[in-house]
Length: 106
Image (cartoon, rainbow, N blue to C red; front, side, top):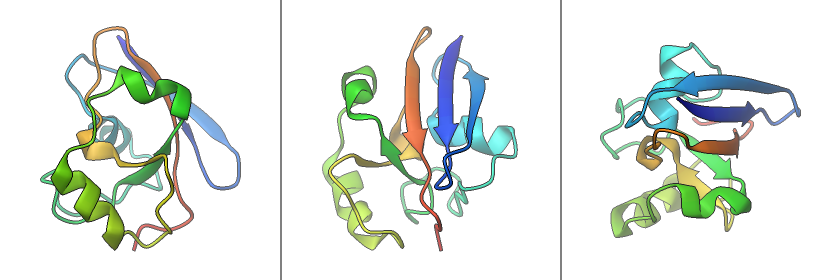
């Protein structure tokens, strides 16, 4: 099982298990986690699943595509160097990542 540690903008953390091949967004939505809106359902067209990926975990997920890079300029919260769209963060079997959700997605 993969593990995702979600920290909200206030500093509260919840840890969720995920299946291999799931995205961080799918894990959040399936578990009713607030902070990930995911209006487009993971089709890379809304930027409402913006997260800040712990830089130490960057090599544990697929690299950012050009399309994701462009979409990140449309997020409600300011983009940072570690900004990612959680729908694009696919998890391996034993992947463990830490993400922080912004204060708002819309």
